[in-house]
Length: 482
Image (cartoon, rainbow, N blue to C red):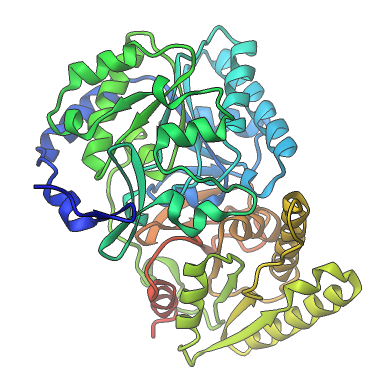
């Protein structure tokens, strides 16, 4: 049966109806056996805190010092995360950070005689400093070790967010429709924009033509669903020259099948860098499923303070979710006039006003939502780096609300990648957190360490581009027991 295709879109139902069923239990059992013999520490570099949106029971470090990386290597768990927040950096800052991380990881690996796999976890809608980050990792690690990378795996599949790759096209699901990523609002990002949805062409576009779409290796859904493990493994064994491996996936089982072949190729001596979304890290890390977190697992019953919700993301989905949240009568809403950032003195007064009001409401036991203006600050064409710097100043202002709080909320929820990273590292001063799990699909919760401003507080990291219109409201209602 032909797929219904129009204006580049596909109907999700017909795509899934045309996919061959796979024995997922058998695949999972095979993967577990392969992972048991895969003695490599997996280091995941997270360009914002949302990359732990599929895992639980793992550590997140907010710095990349030798001590923190060695602590991560010495943990019993096979995987740990380092939060880089590089999506909030300009290109030169991200390059410097990734060079330092790669040097330290290589040094700790040598010291402990422990081989490793390094994964660059990026946005499932393809935004971020690519290919800069993975190229910096490759060049630095190769200069500091005997390791040589044969290729780079591109796997942005993320089921919880409705991101899947079919026929090499990366899609974002909107209701019943699959929309090519290059036709979404994410592709129009002023800092990280792109036009291509075909992942081979996307690589060619982002690399300025240095890597051609025709030179990429494509792992097809047909081979994955047919369990052609030998063929997929052979494809991987043929990769060289740091050419790209494009992985099609429409379900977690597809990622598991690919990972079985990947491990076999790596055991045969192949080495790969990775640019992935959050699904691949769960699979390669052998992280099992767990139920969604409940209020009783997160909130102390004797806590009489309200919660604090901070909204910084400007994507359309966040704005829609904020409008839905405003239907909750038990929440006090405070707008931060973020456009005053271009007038520093006025902006400082505005931040003071918001903090004073939030403190007053929290002390009274009311849940508070602080949100920035919904219109993006637009400085005009060619001003992307200046806009990014101003967005960091706005994020710093939102972060200062947490820094200066005198009362401990019952929980803190941050909406948006840069916002949630800054609140975690600067506001809550977290050095190491534990991922408790997810409160809703794709929405992770950290439990802060003893060193943080509020030890043991549940910190909900709500990505800007995840969830339905009602998901933010439902999450806050759950936390407030409404």
